[in-house]
Length: 237
Ligand SMILES: Nc1ncnc2c1ncn2[C@@H]1O[C@H](COP(=O)(O)OP(=O)(O)OP(=O)(O)O)[C@@H](O)[C@H]1O
Image 1 (tube, rainbow, N blue to C red):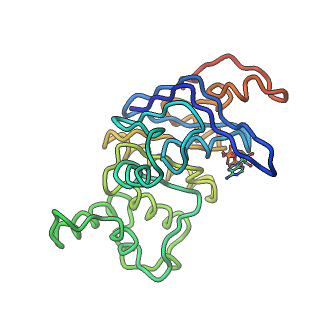
Image 2: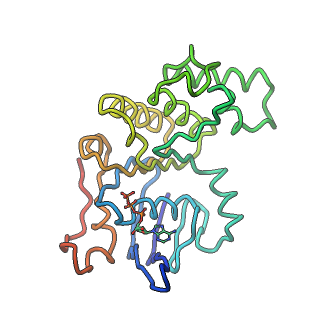
């Protein structure tokens, strides 16, 4: 599903180069559910940005299914993301003037489906996440947990093979965070989607099939001055 080969990514800040990721190799099989943990600033979001094609690597190969992301222009990576990636972020980014249902409808392709088929699919998904009664409500009329459920539908309704979630429950209370993590895992499990989630919450990370510390993946951090050297391992939980 995903293969990284000698991937390096850094930034230039005030004329100085800031190396962030240096990943010798990493493979993710289709359907895996992986939690990425690690300290603030260690490059977790940058890794998701590379996998989602939001940015390209400085060097190395990034292969997702049949796509060689490192060879693509930014506009082709944007097309790849729209067709293949469901992105869920800590903030929900719902349009306040549209209802929950309308926010999701915005991402549903019109071609190939009748108005009724699209409506039925929308209702099935709102039912699946327990929000059927709220489909015509505005975001401001929903709790934060409910808004994130809508954002989850928006990310998954087109059945992307890859789901990337960046602290999806970071702004929610622990109980809601646990419920939403279970929901996300369940939907991705039944649909066979590959799920990679960044989280700071070790309890939530343990619910995934694998938990991977970014320093175990990232040679830049393993050999860095300030971090302890860890042998490479994937934490099977
Ligand atoms: N566009 C950018 N320009 C310059 N530096 C950047 C840019 N994006 C990220 N960085 C730097 O790269 C490093 C890694 O950032 P990243 O957001 O990937 O970390 P993170 O592990 O996700 O952190 P957190 O857990 O706090 O969200 C940080 O030092 C950050 O300041």
